[in-house]
Image (tube, rainbow, N blue to C red; front, side):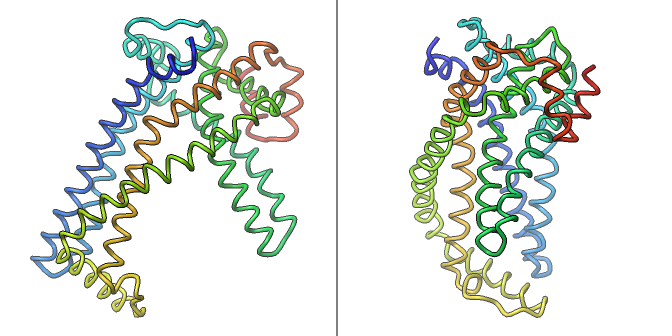
Length: 323
């Protein structure tokens, strides 16, 4: 199966997650706006009502998205893994994906425990790389460190997904050992996997400019029809700054600037959703194929584990659990 075929066959997982994300964002927005209007009318504390409404929405949504993410994200990775390793997919990929995930991770807690372990290992690796900037010193060193840290955080997301794919592939091994193998694959075949970096960052930047830029323009046009609302929000922000004994900047005292900021935030949120739905899965298929091919050619063993035990404490701890 080609990458494009795999992408199209497994896109249904992303679409279902996106529908849930959009509904949850709408719920948060409704609660936030409702809180702002209610508190503004009751005691002229609209900003407090906005914050409370948004906070309630985020807490409620977190529980919903936790299960949805477990079901659809893991199912998508499981089916992508099957496609790149077995060159076939079942007719009902959603049902099969759910079944595979439930068999490998019997509960939501087990899935997130494995995810945290994977992230912990690769983030520890990332911190080692960002120390390069600190060694240079000064503002230049800090800037280099920040850039490296951002790049590593993006790559870590893909590596975590690849490592989860490896856990699904190594279904006869316990998850701890399979996770250790996934980390070793990255180290042993790093040069082969680095060629994916251009694809990861190039497509990410392109989608930000095209999708994010388009929605920013759309939201500016929409929000420009609600001048009174942004005037009220600007006044609330100025009042809040005064209560904290701080001078209100032009950024918050000008309703036009507040409108542009809100449009930018809304565009960024929608870009994040759409990028995750349509762009990232396509990139992931290619990265996952290279990762799985490297691992299948040379499955890591105990000798390989020993090489990382002395470098990363989280890896050593997980290795001990895998034995």
